[in-house]
Image (tube, rainbow, N blue to C red; front, side, top):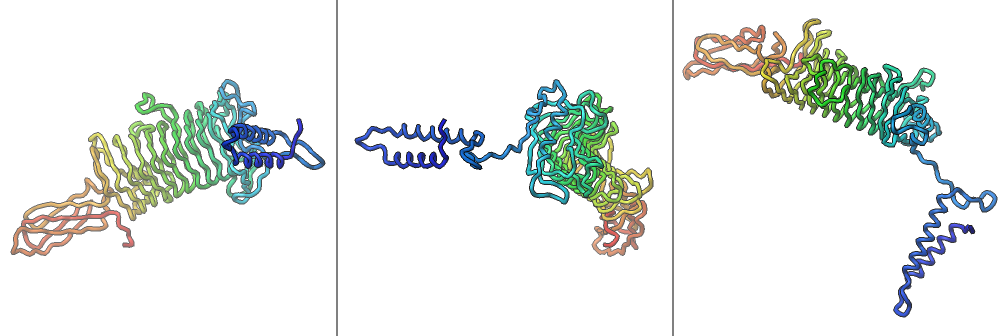
Length: 484
């Protein structure tokens, strides 16, 4: 065919538009549709030329400039089987390798290459793999893997992770972080009881969004070191169940293991595992989480804080469904706005005897009238002897025993002494730091002197200089700071 420069087409199209602006004329038949048809034909021809390979029209010249390659790598184009019948390990790894092979301008953190948001698409398929999905090198960033299911084959390397964001020593960047801004989105991971789901080691700003991770035996998600891994809108369970599973006593593994700092778990459901979330890093936040993994009565734990003395964890607006919270030597722990169902409770566990800066406030507890305390102390390794700035207050309770660090009580009598016993409600034994008391007498002409005599064993003893009929009201506080 004869090829004309694009400028010729633009001129021709413009002339047609100009001509058509004078039509129709009353004395001339309306043929504007013919002009529209010609315009569409010219535009279609122009578009078809832009999609063809450049055609040489002279030395060093091209009719159409080359178009940049797509930044979307589809795994089926590498031979991955979306039906899950045959192994797709090499195909997916090749797609990942090509996605990070191209040199890109700009960097993120030092030593981390910005790959511009390149995407590896799983195209809604189910893929069987026998080895972890890993990047071939460290030092890569701004990459998205999304949209499909990975299932561990029967030959999958045991105790590994389906997606492994870690690097070997030979490929390490020798920097503080090996990866940055890697996103895993809209993925289902079936570990087939042969290991874990996702592992991120020394990774910065990792996103795990809208993922469903099941059939793990170790961790659904493991975060080691690094900084700011955000896990949100996801579902994790060792076994696919919706509560009341007859095999719940045998649940094992951990849904999320946070061994790093400044991470967030938001709007996540953990429906089966021995432990919902283990936290052994600092300054993590858990919000909007529903834990109904193995019940406390069967030995399970919803959230376990395992960093004695350096907790700095916030747990807010979450739902603990027959499984509770355990905190070892908590320092700066905040639990508020949560709902505890089925006799679920909070345990403060003594390791070195420290509990400092703890707020357990404004929560709801619902139980079965079995006399379970909403907050309990585990002092088998020694008593708490360093207690400071602890506030357990303003919680509402139905069918469980209220425990607090602030309490008010009263007693009425006729005599010279009054005793108010706070053992039933106060959390810590023998640890009242503040007392406020008032004696009100019905005898209008009597003005007794009265004094606080003793506060031992969480009992407040008030004595007056003369016998009177009256009521003593007492407020006590165990959590005031030693410096106040």
